[in-house]
Image (cartoon, rainbow, N blue to C red):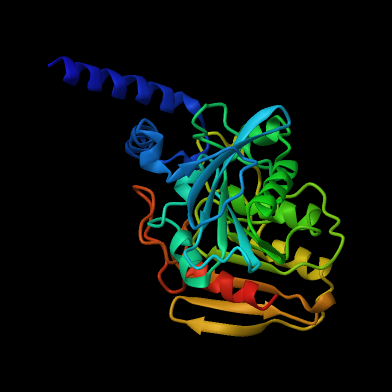
Length: 343
């Protein structure tokens, strides 16, 4: 009876904390947040194969968790090293950024994103940084992507500097192929990748944004950079034709009046100096991809559109409770790695 009372008390306290913690739409349902909180209460070795000092080299495949200090804040990231990793061979690196209100563990969940499995099949190192959070466990985190989102934006958190520091650290820990470092992200995390394309072209070789648009305040990339946008036409959060979905955000002041997908593509074809009209490079029931070429330095801009799927990751086996199923017409993981492989 006592254990039951304790369990009910824990759930009551957790529900109260979650209900007032954030007004960002991707917080998920109460059930998901309780599940996430319970996972965080498990012994650390049940969630992560190894946790080390951030200066420690990584010598074998596996999953690792690190925390570094940046800008006076403790910032964390996960690293997945595929079984095919050879310390004597430079290996591509993919930085994957979670959506607003999420965290690094959720982005590393194969049921929702499949990036661990893709890392194993394609042979790249996958890194999952955690956004800014006022909670010690890093939950309900957001990224400062320009005009979005929430406290990361309002506090002007140096996420660009944090990402640069993580990449530099991973390059010290592993044999990374510096010519093949890429960034992808979901929603607010995808918006951050656009900011990285603007400000860290010396680090990244290309970006892929999913369910996100370019909401940077300013952008002066030092060189042309490959850009892939993957978006559902029926996205009810980051609307395809611009704006924040009505009812999708409990407090719209925490987000912004998002730029449209067409405006985002126009901005990047302009920045990259693309001169050729788009060519349809993929067409399947429920989805298509168009590529803009004739860009400086041989890069490309590509747009992939799914007809359904809402605000989710195409190809995902699982979505947040209450959300429309993800489109299965294409796999975001496969499309982006094919795109990155061309650059």
